[in-house]
Length: 334
Image (tube, rainbow, N blue to C red; front, side, top):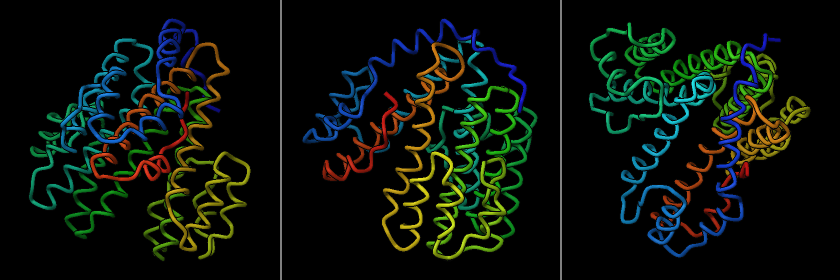
């Protein structure tokens, strides 16, 4: 077990501040009412009254930018609380690696992906883009530089963007696991382990549905979860063993639904169950008066709320029925 190098007492003030904010966050009932509003502008207006940007009249790209800027602003604020930076980096990592995927794929297609870059990562998009163009990586974390060069090399040789994505994902989870070990808190270690298990379960279910396995599946599976990748490689084509492999943890229901999805069932319930398992883990933070668990859970909850609002507003823009939108919403932390 990693040594606990991050002290819960470092977060006494921050925990109190975030707990006060959680009283204003969207509950499942509030999200449900938001999804039932008759049109996009009315829903956007209701969201703005909760402290979000006014997105009435926006297009999908404008909506994405507004919510992305809002999330980046939250991250910048939390960055001011020095002890929270390593915890915050756990969440910023995925935007760094998202940006790497954008740059590599855009280069492969001989186009620009700058408009798709996120400002929520640790590395400013401009710095990342310039490093990729010039080949000067000294200002990047070594893992990101390796992911960028490795993925672009794979894409150049194979012309297969999926293989490039797998290389980037591998570096992402390696760095995430390393960061968790450095933080050294059991709640963080368990959280990252569950994220890896969830990612691997999704990979196996999709692979079985599309009948793509072998070396591609082996390359896609990530080490560091509670279920060994070698065990997942032995799962039969109907996914029968998934229930046993994940029966002892929070992903038991997701595994059951995953087997149904392998047989041709809808993926929606399975994907939602994977996300809900992570939320269920985070709710354990409510038993802690202060410290690392409440801070990690709050950051995840804030991200989840932004995702839910985007799901509702984009659904309204696309004319999707409220019942369908509600079916896609994940469990709420609050």
